[in-house]
Image (cartoon, rainbow, N blue to C red; front, side):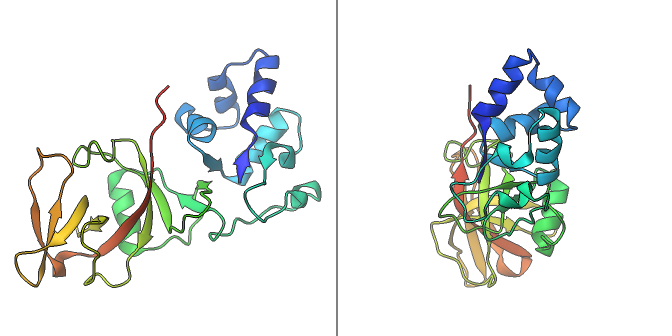
Length: 217
């Protein structure tokens, strides 16, 4: 599911408006607006309703539903659409401590502020990555799609995982440890040393199933 970005840009241009003013009018930051328009992030439906009202349109007119099975017709009938996690992946743009809390609990039952639809990708959540240890494979600001690992004693060596302990988040390649009860976490950036991590210290693990590169204009 996508928003009709060209239509939105055209209407804003016709009214000689600035993007930051439109973002402020519907109560979102400029960064959030850029996420919608340039990074493929799907807004929460209440924001679509506010934007449609501001542009004097019906909400369904802002949605291009060609990539999902959900029809746009519920909006024509004034019915609010409930997003199914199977169709749209919740996106959490939070600080590190909040992200850690989400990853440790695995609790995605509360409503995400935004959603991303990626055809062919099965993931539990999408979040931004901040750091330099995986440069140049993953740059700070890129988005990573994550699938939660139910058995934290089993890993596919050579893949990238987001490993959560009680006090930190580590994004690394997973390699065999020097002992049966440890893992070796390797960085893409040679400036970062390998980490030997006891398996019992791992509170949650998420496999990186997709990397969404930041768009640089």
